[in-house]
Amino acid sequence: MAALIIGCGTWDRGDDAAGLLVVRLLRERGIEAREHTGDGLALIQTWQGAAEVILIDAAITGAPPGTISRWDGSAPVRGGSERASSHAFGVAEAVQLARTLGKLPPRFLLYGIEGCNFRLGTAASPEVAAAARALADRLSARPNGHS
Amino acid sequence: MNRTIRVDTLARVEGEGSLHIKLQGGRVSDVKLRIFEPPRFFEALLKGRHFSEAPDITARICGICPIAYQMSAIHAIERAFGIRVHPAVRALRRLFYCGEWIESHALHVFMLHAPDFLGYPDAIAMAQDHRTVVEQALRLKKAGNRIVEVLGGREIHPISAVVGGFYKAPSKAQLREMESELEWSLETARAAVNLVAGFEFPEFEQDYEFVALSHPAEYPLNEGRLVSNRGLDIDAAEYEDHFVEHHVKHSNALHSVVRGRGSYLVGPLARFNLNFDRLPAVAREAAGHAGLKPPVRNPFRSIVVRAVELVFACAEALRLIREYEPPDAPRVEVAARGGVGQAITEAPRGILYHRYALDTHGMILAAKIVPPTSQNQKRIEDDLREFAAQVAGWPLEEATWKCEQAVRNYDPCISCATHFLRVQVERE
Image (tube, rainbow over all chains, first blue to last red; front, side, top):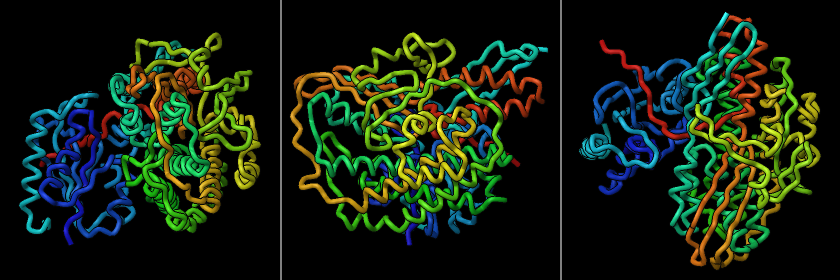
């Protein structure tokens, strides 16, 4: 079974669209991928039962814009701090909660595309758009969408 | 002694915001809740667009309550065009809204607010000791999400609701398929009322002006007059005669006040206090068992009221599903005409006002959106001014947490501006 590919984000908010850009590029190539707002509880439902999940989201790690980071399900992905999440219950919280509840898919990969501009009404920065293309290339090259 | 309670990024509120409280001795000298809201951008974006685009554009304002934005937009435009929809469409819209209430209230009651009362920093820590509670939240949220998915056409960014009705109406069988899960949800919500009613609440009551929709026969979602406990009783078209927005320096959001009076409260407490007798019996009984009766003036008890509204939303969804007869046509013919239309609907967090001015071709000349959080913002600051004085003598960390909790009483949807992943990288 092919991996379930989920791209999180929102249009009209600059680099926040990173995950959606990757989904759009993959679909253009005939590869199935799902858009998601990044609502954590809904994410856990979306990936329920999937053997392998690849999740893509915009990220802030302090790396240069456009940098692609990769974490697998065995590594902790921690939010900025215990009580300083940019969103009430987002991707990082979903991963942590799913792990606590034993609901993290057996194979889980998280790609973060480093963003630099999250202003309303703006398009993704050139660095993020290029990174989205590079990541779409990398995911398209996976045999059958498998890792 | 001068002290400052400062929270640069509020956790467990939707979006990003910050809180700054200055204490001088036991006195609160300044309160600033800074929130960042996108409606001004969307108001500008809507200008020059065709009316048919408004439901989908405004749904993008908030990832948590897209249905509320769609419903207010659709009702406002239908009022401008003088459209009346089929009764079955009206019922479907009510069901659609119940789905969003279930999703939103389940998230807030269990995952965002309960950790405050059970003494955990967040729901993840809570899940280790209260696994069942978290799993119930997940399942309840899924039940709400399923309603939105069936009626909205897809899991996220629902697209099926349009001016005049829906692109496609569901079959009876599609709705009936959700019945058993909603029966479970109703029982779970009833148990949740008892669970949260057992929490400890700070002694804190305020003399609020509660503002909510009121309908003669039903607990309000999409329709009704706008009323308050201080004599307000108006149509949505009169909203801007009675409410005014002020720009405040410390926040991008506008503060809304009742003209000549000041701050007011919208959301679960207001709805419950002004519409208690229109709750279905099962929700009234759940409130009664929990010792909850109107008027509830302690905002910390909003978690119990939200749980009662969860009972209502599940019971109402079940009623609508059982009584559903598909309409002959999912939508009525829409003929654009020039004019202005206003509508107010009850988003999970409180009233959401939309106004559209349209030309004869149905192009949007102007749009105005007043979300519930900007209506509550001044009220939240007023609460904090009183509440911070009560906790001024506490250790700073504890006082800060309590004040954050006072903000979370309102389930503020601060922007949903960006949802990026903020990650601490530990390099080896």
